[in-house]
Image (cartoon, rainbow, N blue to C red; front, top):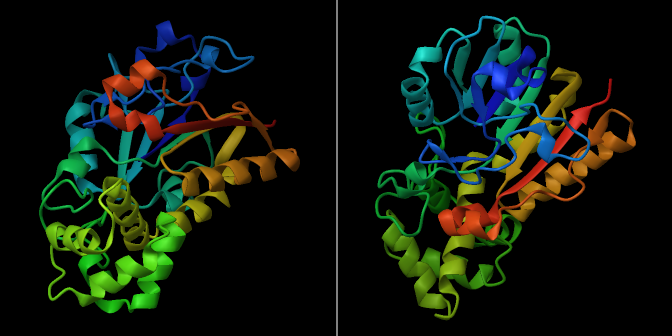
Length: 309
């Protein structure tokens, strides 16, 4: 999900806003995966003020503020509406891709915002859902779409792709060394309709040691391909700077090296051009305690930057 922050959320002491802002993904759309870094004090050279959020909650509404949420998953938006129904006067939610932030801001009558938080992760609800197909640990159909109202699902992608196309997907998006063997096994299956079918195809041709990691890489690769995730991220990275006010902050949380690499290089390129000041020389990661509280926090990497005035 993307959160766009308008007005003074970045400019008032945390105690005066009534907001709690957590710039890490919220597991089960509720508690933060990594509950640190809720203020700019946690970043080098910054004072004790709120600076980013995925899910925003408020003890009271404030008409000076505007929060715009963007997500392709309608279920995620519905849960946000339920959780934040008392704050609807400052909240606007859009069922759309964050790559379209220019059109969304135009529809909101906004030319720029004071803060952007982009969370590229999945929630436990999405991973555990039986009808979404995101996790190899669950059961159900091979879907994997963020937006179930649009586009082709994973089953259709597998059916229509030839073996070489699957090999390319597994190598490029999963960095899987057994890509050719797995693609061959998938194409030899008599049926490929469910998560169980895909697991069986992988099981047949891979060694048992660390097979869970192989499952995870193949499911990641298919999910990225189905949703065009890296293409959308690249579109966003090419335009976000034009919609961030001078002094405005951007926070991006990624969960695998392909995403983090794109974010890192984009920030560096903008910094070399003098338009962005990188606040995190190295990505912020979860502590051991945070990993124990939620095993999915281990892969999260947070990068933050500020637009130069």
